[in-house]
Structure formats: C-alpha cells, structure tokens
Image (cartoon, rainbow, N blue to C red; front, side):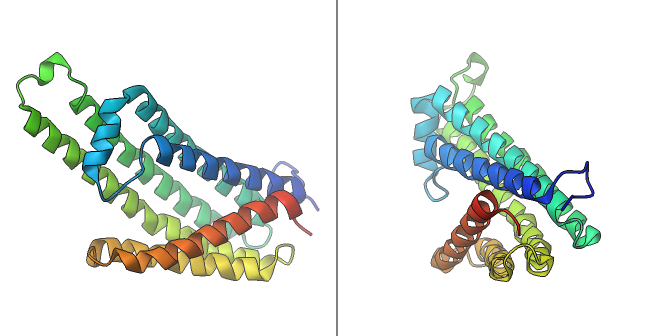
Length: 226
C-alpha cells in the first residue's frame, strides 16, 4: 500500500518512523548521561558543567539531536497515518513541532549556565556565589521550559493514539496505550506546576510512558504494518 506523500510505501514509512524514534531514545539517554541527568539537584548539575565542559556540551548537542529525531519521527508517522485522517495527522505533527521548539529554546538556558560558569574575564565583576546563583537560575528555567514542552508532547499522543487505533494496519492495543500515555504525561505536567511536593505521583506515570514509547518504537521497527 502506498502513502499519498511522495509515493512512499507505508511499510517503509513505518520503519523510518521506528528508526527515528529509536534514535530519539538513544540520543535522549546519551544527553541524560552526560548532561541533563537531574532535576532535583542543581548543585550536581553545576558540578558536571564545571568538571568537563566538553562532555557536558556533547550532552547538550545530543539533547538537541534528540529533539530533531523526535520531530522526524513525527513526520514519518504523519506520512504513515495521513490516509487514516489527514486533519488529525496534521494536528499531532503541529503539536509535536511546538513541543520540540519549546524544548530547544529551554536548552539555551543550559548553554547560558555554562557561559556563566566558564570563568570568562568579563564575569569577574560577579562573586563566585553570585555566579553559582545565576547558573542555578538558568537550570531552573531549563527545567520549567522542559516541563512546559510536556503539555504539547502529552497532547500530541492523543490524536496519534487515536489514529493508530483506527488505522487497521497497526494494533489497537498500541493505540490505547498511546492515549493512556498522553494522559500520563499531562498529569506529570500538572503535578510539576501545581503539586511540586508530590513527585512520587509522576513515577508510575513515567513508567506508562516508557512502556508505550518503547512498544511503538519496536513495533514499527520489527513488525512495521500489516
């Protein structure tokens, strides 16, 4: 069966989506390992920045690459699911794009924190304590920006899951799982801003996200479409 976009076969579009999703997961893991590994401890994150700025920069680049791969995965899914419902497919692509844009803008705050801690001569007018405070502020802005992006990353999964459910060439349970994932991410978003002292609420929700996104990735890569 051919996709209406550029005559790409749907099986190929599914495999391309799975590949980009896998690259997104791997690059996110690399970014978390080298750079963005903790929301709760800004002091530890500052320690990573100052210990090896090159590795931290590599982690930030991996973070930006993960955003690119995520957008490309959404594009391939748009090609795959456009025949089911063009409007809903366009909706999830635009929501994904908005989330990616916010994520990339939030990463600028970590580059700013690195600059503050770089020891550049023009920063000598500030005391060490002031520089640490500024870096911590930029880290907090990054955290808030990343969570703001979850409003769009959670919402895009709802039309995506619905189209997977209605497609007829992808498993219905996978579509249901993605829609549950949408609600889980949105609950995480509201918990972070409205109930910041109840982080434990988000842990089971993040487990749902992990299962849903890995299931989607490996189904597309291994099974493709019917």
